[in-house]
Amino acid sequence: MLLYVLFFGVLGLVFGSFLNVVIWRVPRGESIVSPGSHCPECGHILRFWELIPVISFLLLKGKCSRCGLKISLRYPAVEILTGLLFVLVYLFRTERNMIGIILDLAFVAFLIALAFIDIATFRLPDVLVLGIVLIGLINPLLTKDPLFWLSLLGAGTAGGVFTLIAYFYPEGMGWGDVKFVAALGLYLGVPGIFSAVFFASLLGVIIGGLRIIVYKKDFKDPIPFGPFLAGGAVIVLLFGSKLRDILFFLT
Image 1 (cartoon, one colour):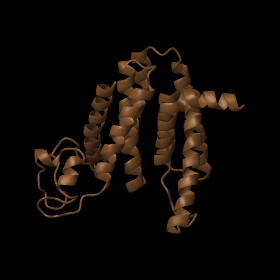
Image 2 (cartoon, one colour):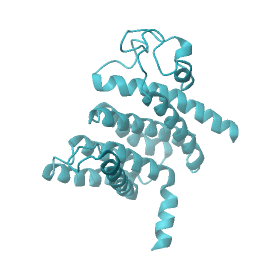
Image 3 (tube, rainbow, N blue to C red):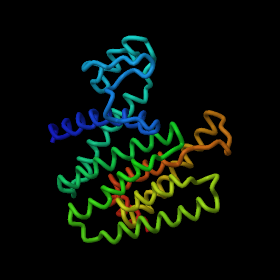
Image 4 (tube, rainbow, N blue to C red):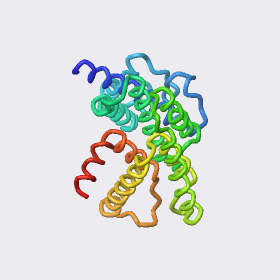
């Protein structure tokens, strides 16, 4: 098991490095393939040893080796988070075959990219949301899930509810959130999507409250909901069946 944990951890670190490229370039409409990774300030093309996840950040002391531009802590944070979540998917999604695990890893990768982009830009790019839709459609075909209709129901129901919220309360809910939650519903199905929205709301209340207390923010200060939806989706993905057991026991 330890070898598998190491494998998925390293795989996550590598994918996390790629996700940093996605997070930076997609909102700017840039190609994620070319040019190669470079410093946005001086254009320095990163050498191999400057591309090693986390380690390069430490070796470079968080600065560009040519111009000294400070490298955001987001880069190692995304790499570590992706590595951790990849390991957790392997450990907790034991009921899935390898194809299912690969789809779960792709799902998590899209969630991470969308969450960090939403934090930085208050946008959820359609191209990444579409990625979740595609793996949501592929998932039941490759894993031979007989309950695909529940996925369609989850997408339609959650998307419909959020559409009403966005229509009547556009200040608090964007259309990007509507499309995102519908995509999540397609992958998580029913009741998974409703659990994800519940945990997203709970996370929003907790973190929003901490922002007000610690940073003296106002209730009217905007806060992106996408990261909370992504967090709720991860919670349901990893612990969904166990959470249902706990709730059933409590009731």
